[in-house]
Image (tube, rainbow over all chains, first blue to last red):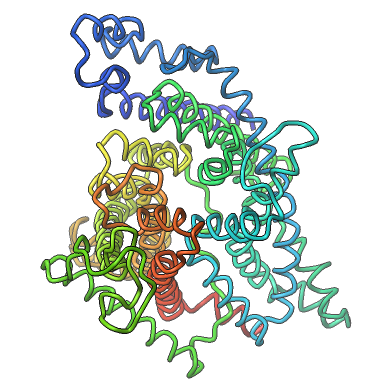
Length: 310
Length: 294
C-alpha cells in the first residue's frame, strides 16, 4: 500500500516537472520575444535591454528555469508583464468568476445527462434511440462558437431576455450568467448523453441484470436499481476528470459575454504576450489535474480492494 | 502508468445493418468525396478567387450566378467562394493533423506496448505530461510559440492529439503480444520489427484509424476556435474568420454568411462522425452486438 502510494506520488511529481519543462520551453525557447511585443519593433536597444533585465530574461536559460521551478514550489508566480499586477490575486479573482460560470451548468448537466441517458437506454434500439443519436451527433457537429453567436443574438439581442454581456459579482451574477449557463449546458449534454448511454448499455447484459429481470423486476427498476449503480464508476470517472477544467472557465464564453474569469484572462494575455500569466495558468491547471488524478486513484484504492494489487 | 478506463466510446447499439443506415453512410461518404474534391481543386488553385468582387455590398442570396448563390459580404465578395476557400483550409488542417498524429501515436503505442519497462514508463510520462495540460491551453501555447498560421495549428493539434491514438494502440498491443499468431511469427524467426510492423500493426491499425476520424473532427473544430481567437489562419480563407465576421453581420440581419459557413462546417463534421461510427461498427462489432441483444 505504502509502496503504491509512493510510486503514484513519484509519478505525479515527474509529471509536474514535465509540465513545467514543457511550458518553459514553449514560452522561452520558441515563442516570439515578449519584450519586442511590449515595446514595438522600433524600440531602442537600451530600453529593450532594460526591460529584459527587469523581467529577468537576460539571465541564462537554466537559471530562468530554476527560478520558474522555485516559483511553482512556492506557489508565487510573480507579476504580470503588462500591468504589473500580482498574479496570485489576478488568478484568484478570475478563478471565482470562472467557477461561477462553469459549476452550475456542470452540476445540472450531470443530472440531466444521466436522466436522458437512462431514458434513451430504456428505449434502446427503438425510434427514440435512433432519433436522439442523430440529434446529438448533429448537435455536436456544430462549433460551440456558433451556439454562442446564435443564442447570444437570438435570446439576448433579438428577444431581449438576457443582458447581451457584462458581469457583476454577488447576487446580480445570475442575471448575467443565465445565458452562458444555458449555452454551456447545451454544448455539454450531447457528448455526455452518448457516453453515458453506451456505458449503461455495456452493463445491460450482465448476469446480475438478467437475474433481476428473471425475478420479475420492471425494466425501469432494472435500469435504475441494477444497471445504474454498476455504471456509476465510469460516469463518476468522467465527472471527476472534468472537475479541474471548471476553474479554467470557458475561453469563448467569457470572451463573448465580457466575463472577467480565467478564460478571458488567458485570451487577453495571448493577445498582448503576457507570458507570466499564461505560464502560471498552464502550470496551475496541470497541478490541479495531477492532484485530482492522485485523489481519484486514492479513492479507488479505498473503494475497490482489487486495485491495491496493481 | 496508463490506467485502462474508457477508450473509444464503448460501442453503441447499432442500426448499421438497416437499409436506411446503410444509405446514410453512403450519402455521408459521397458528401466527404465532395469536400475532398473542393480541397483538391483548392490545392491546384482551381477554385474561384475568394477575394474577387462579384457584386454589391451584402447582397442577399440570388440564383442569378453561382457566385451569388449564397450572397456577398460587406466588400462585395462571394460568400460561397470564401466558404469554399475556408473548406480547403479546414480539410488541409484536418488531414495534416491526422497525418502527423496517426503515425506518431501508432509508433509510440506499438513501442510502449511491446517493450514495456522503462520505455513504456518514458512514453507514459510523455503522455501524462501532455494530457495534464488542458488541451486548449497547450494548443494555443504551441500555436502562439510557432508564430500562428496553418502549419502552427496543425503541429499544435497533432502534438496534443497523438496521445489518444497511442493509448488505444498500446492497449491493443498488450492484448495481442501474447497471442498465438505472434508466437508463431517469433518461432518462425521473425525479427521484432517484422512482428511489430508486419504482424501486429495490421491487426491493431483499425483502432487508430477510427480514432483518427475523431482527431480530424477535433482539428477542424479547433481551427475555427483558434482562428477566431486570432491564433490561426490570418489571410481570410478560414471558417473561423468567416464566423467571426458573420457574428458582426448578424446584428444587421445579414444571416447568409453565418448560415453558409455553418452548413459547410456541419456537413464535414457530421459526415466524418457518421463514417467514423460506421467504420468502428464494421471493424469492431463485438461490444455492439452484446449491447443490442440484451
